[in-house]
Length: 551
Image (cartoon, rainbow, N blue to C red):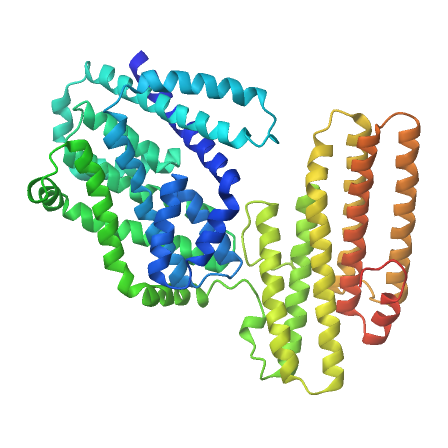
């Protein structure tokens, strides 16, 4: 039983080492890697080479693929070039297999792992995260953990196999090993750990080369699960890229699985690679090279397929994508409804960001078209929709000739702009709210509770204006603004009073004042956005001219 725990500990230590290694490398050269990847988007060949090189250096295809998702989300990558980077990333991740196969079992790992981990770990615990050598020491510590994890895996596997009848594994079909590789990698979220474990078992004679190759193919499929999870509830383009990566790996692995025997025959008998560990690394590289050759000629066609797959039923917008700008009157109505729906999402974001309980938008007004796992997802969605509406506005502006329609359009985009201002202020306040919510200081926690209650009351007062349940007059909105300004001044006075009575330190006071300001700015912006959206141009202009509003 101790051998099993040693093996499990080895896997966990290896994964921790990978994470520390990735984090350190991202800090050391994160911007350089990102800029390098962005430069590799001019054509698909450079994309494949760039993805392979960066993945080999970062030792993680997941990190590179997440970067690609970010580029796609920012709309700086064309679909086929993003897919090319993914293909290159798959090839680059085989570099880990080569290192382990050629070095990991040929040297005394224990003699290197213990001193490297001990010395680097001791220095790392004494350094401040702001020290310029902190990331380099973490890199060495992560590398030490990799070696240590590999050592425990080797010894754990060797000890375990002494008590296991190896003949029983020969009875399992290869499909079992394929599924095993996919399941393990999906659980541990690190294909390198699966590969290291497989090489350890193969080195100890626990499985055949064919079974090890099947596990590697399963790991190629399982490693795509992280990207699929990260892309859920986000921009449609991100879903396309994540699905593309899944299809690349799955199709390549299934085809290679059907030809495991011939491929290993070519590697060992034609090419002459007799060592099983090297053969397995060669097999993984060959599969990814064949995947590149298979998909490269069809990247543009494949990208178009992914575009069409989502375009009809998964739009970020709910209205404007259905109406052509060639119909200005209908387009204006669609824009107004889209911005109103945007405001519903913004209000819901306020609820999630501040942690308001028991608040629900009216069912008749709220038509959520997307599912979100957290507040960050919803904020990303708001930014995406904001950009889509802005583009629609620019195109529609060129099609409108009527002066009144132009004024209305400008008023609508002002509502959109202020709504986004409000969301940004809420984003800034969210981390402070989380800190206050978890604070052991009663004054800070009670202030958070009060601010949450006030935000809930504000949203309850604001929402009926947006839904039309309450008369939308400039006087009502002026009154709401006056109450908001008075509440802000009262809060400031209360905070400084707590500071004078020593309930708060200067730093705590600064945090609460900033938090209070962020919430006040968010409320002002949301109030102005609603007024721009529902008032006539004359009333909206009068309200806009009140002092203190963000323009």
